Image (tube, rainbow over all chains, first blue to last red; front, side, top):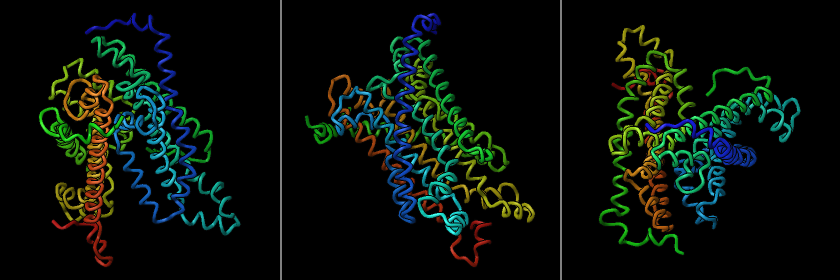
Length: 218
Length: 230
């Protein structure tokens, strides 16, 4: 097994840069998706029975393999194949498709007894949304956020096959030269990044939703 | 440049290395890998679900596997054991296994608890309980898990082409090497179409399975929920 840990110390700054790129490429789409998903999710939820149809369409979008989207987007966007914008847009689309579902399911989980009580007490539509329904939907939305973030971090590496790929570059480097060190370093960093991001989201949830008793959710 | 040029050229659809033959290869990889994963995961899930264990396994496994970068794992496996077809299929099956296992366990746990308890009280054996109560309830979730697994493997096989396995990913590999973007675009479109087709097919199957598990008439609801026709 061709393994040389001194490679790591020699290339530490390069690996650090790649990790930073990786985090950016994975997390920026999540923020974009969140900003899009909440209003869209609310709208879809409002349509009532039609929401199932919309969610089904989003499910189809989510079924498209990441690599296919990375390759096809340049034709649609007019960008070059190697442009990281393709990765960012593709991941934003996936993340949004997934988060909209989380928002809709979260809103759906609010029992009608609660919404009706809120209306009875005097909450108008918009106030009820922001003060009652969305906060109660938050646990589900946070769960979706965790899923989407971790998935994105894993997907960024795939783009190395047709682009820059951030930490994915360590994988192709290791493979091309039959050199195990960058492969293992890349895998470890990818997993650590995912765990860290997941932890941060959990901490944010604890801070933002202190009233939620955390049971074993997904 | 006409991005659809490669796809629309009939010459690319027949003969060796054509889209059709790569599609068949792709389907073969996906079929064998998912079958292998299911053959292990479903019985294991039946056992765990029936025994009532597996909740921790479910959440932990699902979260953990999601964090793994497929490309890294495939490249590592290719270096360690070589990238021949059998090894690739095993790796693909290992990656698909958690999805199916978690879905089976969740499906089994979903069975109506009073029905299970009554069945035990009536003297049904474990096998009968599984077959008549837990499995029919689990079936829609298992089909849904299979759907997600197959869609996932369709994507992973595409990536596997980069460690010199076959399948539609070859269109991407060749297109990249020959700087032929229309070829890559063709590969991307066919892969996407395949994934969507599988997704729609199995979504429909899951709906059908769900309908079978639900009672046909309100009056007979409790009985029908408890015991499926044997």
